[in-house]
Amino acid sequence: MTEPTILAIESSCDETSAAVIRGGKVLSNIIATQAVHEKYGGVVPELASRAHQQNIIPVVSQALLTANVTKSELNAVAFTKGPGLLGALLVGCSFAKSFALGLNIPLIEVNHMQAHILAHFIEDPKPSFPFLCLTVSGGHTQIVLVKDHLDMEIIGQTTDDAVGEAFDKTAKMLGLPYPGGPMLDKAAATGNPEAFQFPVGNMPGYNFSFSGIKTSVLYFLKEKSKDNPGFAQENMADICASVQQTLIKTLLKKLVQASKDLGIKEIAIAGGVSANSGLRKTLQDYAVKYKWNVYIPAFQYCTDNAAMIAMASHFQYLKSDFATQYVSPEPRMKF
Ligand code: KG4
Ligand code: ZN
Image (cartoon, rainbow, N blue to C red; front, side):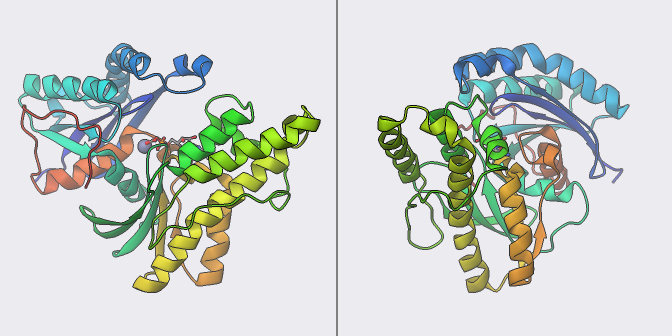
């Protein structure tokens, strides 16, 4: 088989992205971040769909141009089937379907969460199987046992909010601008992580709960602001550092337990929250402490991007795992 050349499209949330991959090597990865949501303090689904519609043709054209690949050289078109926002997914799905139909080439449906994990195969060093991946994003928090490229098992997950949501909502309560997670990360850099204590839910097994911390931060701020309305502003760095440390410790406690129970020391992180500097640093410390080999994706492959969709589609192509023209998006897609 000649090296497959695939165009991949990601449109699950607020990034419109297209990438081209050839023989497993990413040739381009174009990302249009939608600024329209900033003034609303969060992603507005209807506006996301409209922005995807506006962005998709220029983003795909740029991805082909940067890769120096023509449409006739493509062997398949891949897209994110889910999970994600229905209207946003529909744009990528419909575009990919018509593009594949027009070129008479196969269509590949990709699971966004599996793709976050497969981002580890874009660059070296690559984890060896089996490995554990802590997948942390705006909508998901999972510990995944990765047995092979396309053979994964979720062994733990959040029972309520995702950790990214906890970052974003805390940031919003503190008056930080959207997107909250990276802002909280930045503010935490100069703070004392031991300054304040916040409780976290202790769930059985490898599961998590992040809804409680939101409420505890809310009541903490209400209480402290009673006598001093400027409390949050004056203690911003310390509050952010303390919240961040609590979230990181909660995540890593379960990861340590899973690693011990399963005897696996190949440990990866993936998803938007893996861009968090505190999590990246703590994971490096744990690598020394627990003799782990840790795998942390490059920044551009942590948050949503089509390169990871392309990587997943490459492995699916090799298995002839193709979709039909009847495929439709699955906002709550599982694997
Ligand atoms: O994977 P992703 O880009 O989209 C989803 O699939 O959800 O993840 C987005 C999430 C958001 O909650 C965002 O605030 C969070 O990742 N995030 C961060 C950082 N960068 C992105 N959270 C904490 N620290 C960061 N540096
Ligand atoms: Zn994502």
